[in-house]
Image (tube, rainbow, N blue to C red; front, side, top):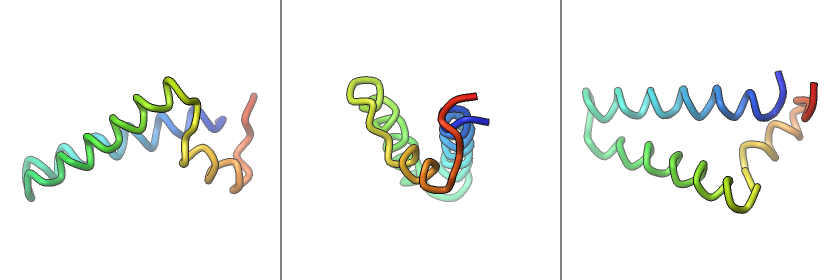
Length: 64
């Protein structure tokens, strides 16, 4: 799996987890969902992703 694949997997997991936590624990968890969405939105324009930098430093390949 490449960096982009991992970003999609991790972002999807965090979104689903924060929605569940917002439903069953406390509504403030929805702010975490909004934060992830904002990061994905800004990545579309700037191509800057903090998670991508971390994954690259961990040795995840950028291309197949």
